Every structure is written in structure tokens, then in C-alpha cells.
Image 1 (tube, rainbow, N blue to C red):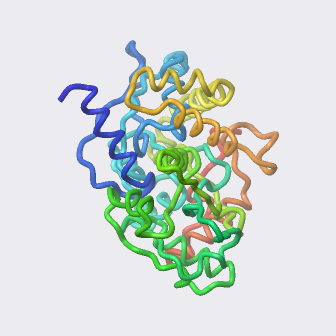
Image 2 (cartoon, one colour):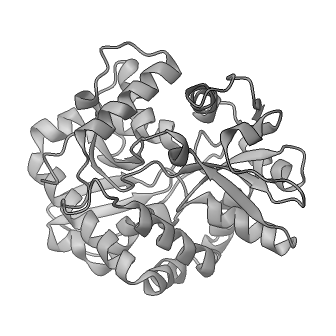
Image 3 (spheres, rainbow, N blue to C red):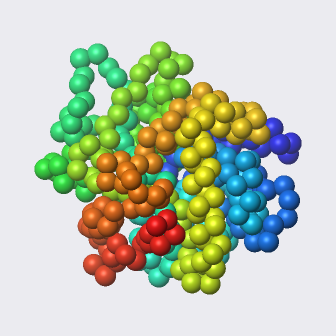
Length: 344
């Protein structure tokens, strides 16, 4: 298969599937690698396709930041958050773009993954809806009686009921449907389901672009605006890497944040860098993803700290919500799923 055909298939999958969750798409390939050999080779699982959320890694490769840190980094497409974290745990990748929910679920099954720095200081998830005349959605109660499509293995199947309950609503206020990931976006845009999961820096700009072409507008209700004080995605590795190769972990983490800093300061150029390699990607969608990620990288609690630093109370809040939502053992603590040692 020619490269442009391969890329087109992946971009089509992105337009048709939700960004988080297990995607039923076979095949993966290295996207970029540093052009010269380096002392330490590592593979990074992007968790999905090239997009703004992981663009900092692609920029760091392109700008030579990893090479300067003595690393040869390959960025490889992934199949969703939970699978990515499990593949990191299995040693298939040294690092991956993962979230605290996936890390906790991995550890609940005996895994040994850990977050070593955040990309999103706050949870980027939201519930999206199509704007309609006469319908106002400003709070969770406004979602009562609506249907929401999501992948069968998507965290939303647990997150939404727990979030509704935390907002004083019956967990069944929203009817959750288990859909094949490839049918979620079409079902939503065609009005067969009222709501869908969306993620800043990832599929939210994609959804808005697709809706705009139909003359429609997307609205969203962010979980974090209504009590979900959780950490978002970040860099995940294993306890083995932390114990045996802490210097590699530190160099990778620091070079990655250089990439995100450059991307945040140069969104248009960064989108151009990525799209120049993968021309089937929509540059304006990529620019919007990059800008959204830049706004999520810090907030009032993390401002003034080094990139990737996380406040203990937010991680404790994250761990409690995940334990309750997924009925996990109380022995899974915040300190088990992340460390600030490589960003302090």
C-alpha cells in the first residue's frame, strides 16, 4: 500500500471514530523517527493518529530536541488510551500518551504503569451536542432523557453515570448506547443519537469541522465545569523504566516539553510541520487542536511550576473518582499512578 493511501485510511478512521477508547482498526506504523542513530532508542505510542494532543512529540522529533538529548525516538500510531497503556506495560513501547483512568485500570489488573508528567493539567473531556433552535444546554440536568453514543469499551460508560450522580442526577438520566467506534460520529451527525463524547485537542475540532460542512454547529458541556476535577492525559511509562533507566525517562520527558512549548508558541508552523509529512490531515483542524492543547497545559493550580507538574490534591481527587466510577479497590492510590520526580 502506498504511503498516501495508508494515511488516507487513517484520516478517514479519525473522521469516523471517537478519539478515546479501543478502535477496531488493524495495523500501526512508525510515523516519524529521528534521522540519525542515537545512544538510546525509544518508541512512543501516540494512542491514536497524529493530532494536536500528541503534536508536541512530533514537533520535538522534527526540531531535533530528542536527538540533542541523546535519544532516537519513533512515534507510532495507537489504538486508544487503554490499549496504549497496556502495550506500554507489556514492554512494546517505552512511553505512551495515556490517561489516569487507563493507568488505574491497568494497575487494577496487576500492571505497573505510571504517569511521569502531564500534558493536560485538567480533564479535556466534554459531552457534545448539535445546536438546535429552542434548545438550551448549559448544565447536566439539561441532558436528561437524551441518548449518547460511545464505544463499548470507552470510559464514558462509567464516567457519565458517575458524573451525573455527582451532580445530583440519577445515573440513568442519559441513555448510554454501546456503538462500534466507526459509527459514533456518523450516528451523532445524522441525529440518531443526541450526544457524543468529545475531547479538546483531539476530536472536538474534527467534529466541529464536519458539522460546519453541513451548516451545523457543535455545542459542548465540559465535565470539569461541573465537578470533575481530574487530571488529563500525559506521558506514561513503567515502573521498570523508572527504576532501571531514570535518566532516559528524564531526558525524554524534558525534550517532550520542549516540543510542546515550541508548538504552543508556533501553532501555525507546528501544524505545517505535521501536515507537511501527512498531507491528508486538515491543517486548520490541526491548528485548532494545537491551540486547545496549549490552553490545557496549565491552570491556576499548576501555573508557576515546571511543565508536567501535578498538584497532589487533584491527583487524589482523580484517584477517588476513578475508584468510585469503576468500583476499584481502595488500595489504588494517587501516588501509585503518577510521580512528579521527572518534572520538578
